[in-house]
Length: 164
Image (cartoon, rainbow, N blue to C red; front, side):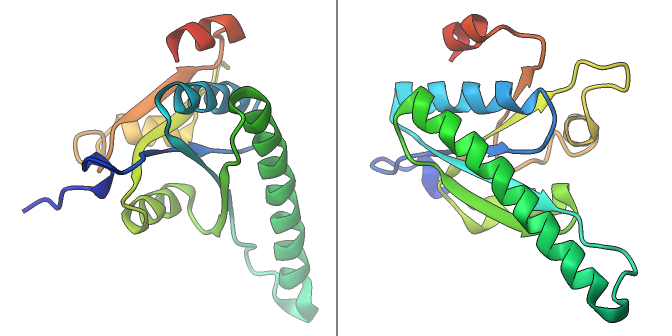
């Protein structure tokens, strides 16, 4: 039996989850999530995922690399949070996790029953929409625990505002 998420119960404020990274399209997804949250009274969660360093544990190099990655993730989250404050007048929840991006995304959704929508940015380059969008649109699309909104990276701010 599938457990019903708390985000769908009356009286709970839903949360939108936006994945923050260093891509140009990321700002589009954050804009959509912020505008939509402001319009419907939802909250927003910004997620940054750090890939753990590989085989760099000699003389503490791994710890230094981890600290640098965490600082970079915090910087990106702070930039996205500033955009959310400017666009929606609300303070977002910021989360940093270490691991495989898709796995950490699912773990966060499972841990927070108020998350009701995942907002992702789709790349516009020749390499495709991005690995996370491709993975979710593939085999896991039918089994994902919440709806996913994919914001095309080529949309103008005015178009995103109208859609949100």
